[in-house]
Amino acid sequence: MSIGKMSLDQAILHLIGARQIPDQASMLELLAQEGFQLTQGTLSRRLAKLSVQKREGHYQRVIPHDHPMPPYTLFESPPNLLMLQTGPGFGMALAIRVDRSNVPGVAGTLAGEDTLLIAVARGHELSEIRARIEKVLGPPQ
Image (cartoon, rainbow, N blue to C red; front, side, top):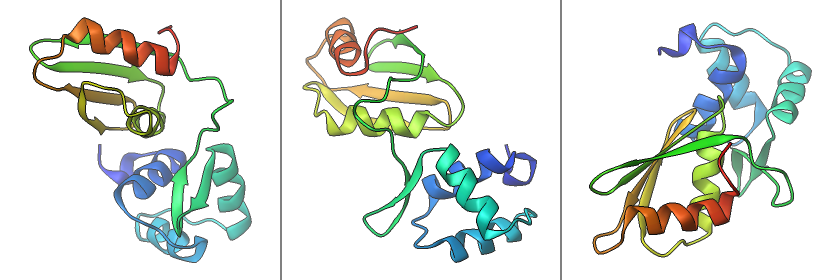
């Protein structure tokens, strides 16, 4: 999907996933280049709604540890991939949660807007890693 066909929320999430944006002025400029005209106040409200905060010098989506996980489904894709599908905008947040949990047997993750691919390291069973991911994220829904 081209950024020009995205909603404002999708465009914001796409931009923060693709770039390290240091401030709201830069984000407003990038959004304007894509055809979105909005005020700083509107951007601030959208960022709050999307749980986007400035961390480590740039904007990123942050889900607090005590926040319930968004619903997701998890599928095994042999020989070494797990595919997680969730709601729009939560792919990156769930990838961060998996990555920061240092789940043994996870070689890495690749996140999109609503999908997360989890590469399983050689020598580990998909079902074993799936169970570990479900412990980190809670049961799929």
